[in-house]
Length: 159
Image (cartoon, rainbow, N blue to C red; front, side, top):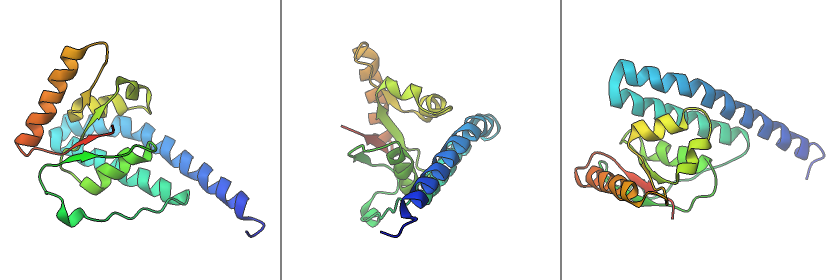
């Protein structure tokens, strides 16, 4: 390994984290403005923009992604079951699934993520499965099922 490699790695990671924090901060404001000015479709485009910038930040830190099999994916609705490794997973899935209204089945603990995350999940139609409120969880899953059945978007589940 070259002498300066560890320092470059740390600098790249620091730059990527700075980008993520900056993008997340700006995103909180942009998504609200997009939803007010342009409705749900504009909100989805803003979420895709966030995903694009988050994946770019990952590239700055040295993350390389290869996506295979998208040609087999339905262009309107799909159920995606994915292994969850990091926060970058959310951005990558939105980025590759595109503006199809990607929803997530998530634990309410995601509300504590970067600014705007709760707003994006709630307004985007994601399902929150609170173990303390099973009736509400079932209702949220039924809404996700209707979204898939009607072809209005994709639903991502992290088991």
